[in-house]
Length: 159
Image 1 (cartoon, rainbow, N blue to C red):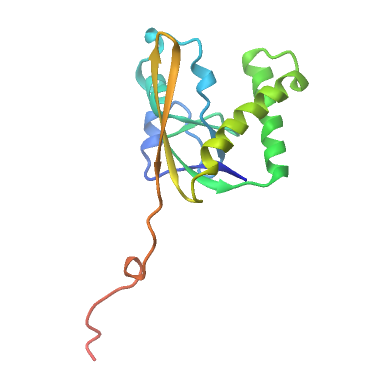
Image 2 (image 1 turned 30 degrees about the vertical axis):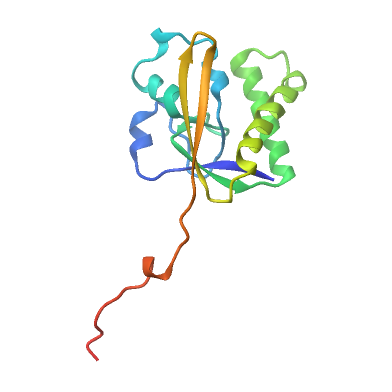
């Protein structure tokens, strides 16, 4: 079973998102956040979050890249509860029990996205606002095979 964790290639996410996700936290698309947005909402850092930000489940921050990673059932259950609580506190769901199936479905969609990719594959998301609503597309960047020349120091030892 797989899901994705936030990764940072550099410090840019610290500057382009109002609230950057923490490295290593579990993420999902989080496109539901933008379901009622209009063109008027797409400005500055909010536009960046809309355009290509994954949602961190612990900080509700955004990140540009996520990496596919294995996840255990117990961790998935914890994330389901965390997301259900977010739906109650931020989106007006009546209670966690009612929100839990919706949270589970959001996580299942992310699992489906990750399942066919090897661990460490990087994923990006791109969103656009259409007349039908928010349209998301995804791109996978496979981790290159590491070879020793990436780590070894070559040169004349003088011997």
